[in-house]
Structures are given as C-alpha cells and as structure tokens.
Length: 116
Image 1 (cartoon, rainbow, N blue to C red):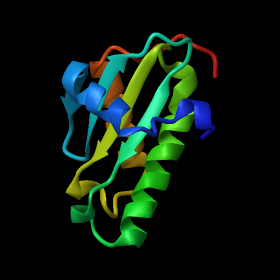
Image 2 (tube, rainbow, N blue to C red; image 1 turned 120 degrees about the horizontal axis):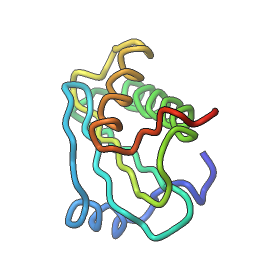
Image 3 (tube, rainbow, N blue to C red; image 1 turned 30 degrees about the vertical axis):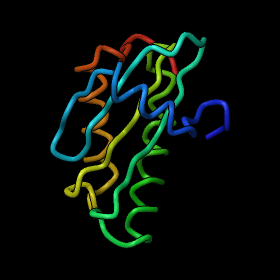
Image 4 (cartoon, one colour; image 1 turned 45 degrees about the vertical axis):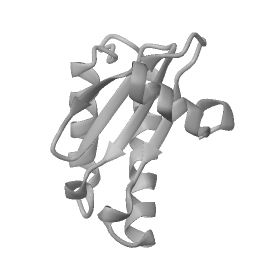
C-alpha cells in the first residue's frame, strides 16, 4: 500500500480512537472517522496477543490485501483502522474477506454499484 494511503502516526490512531466510530466482528474490529482528504487512509493493528511475529505479519499481510481489493468499493475521505482479534489467526482468506466486507457494509462505507 502506498505511503499516502497509510496511517503511520500515533496521533492519527489516537484521533480515530476519540472521534471515530467502531464496529465489531468476531474476527476483527473496524474504526472509521472522516479525514478531510480525497482518499482513504488505512491502519492495521495486530497485538502481541495474536501470537509471534510470523502470525502477526501474516495477519497484517492478509488484512492489507483484503483492504486493497476492497478500496474501489469504498467511499472516500475516511481514515479506517482494522484491529485484528485473536480469532483471526489461522483463518482462511475468504473468511477474513467476508468479515471485513460485513463490517464495512455495517459502517455504510461499501458501495455495491462501483466498477472495480
């Protein structure tokens, strides 16, 4: 994911915690807040409770890929943070994709009629 589309500063994550709205699923949580830009920025949180570095990196790569493929379907102008929960470790791609899509639809960020 390109640098301009990533949340990298702790102040951005703190702002999302205060101003953002959160939706929960058994595999992950999604926090969303407007950012005033013409594009979305994404952040990924994988805590050490998930497992070792190999497990955390695999989960992060999986979430990045699902978010990358979902980006054309999303409304723009938001900061989005994906917070992995313990149950996500070891889950197949399709389950994670379905969970993420479900959460983004609940957040009213998903647009069905967009051509990828």
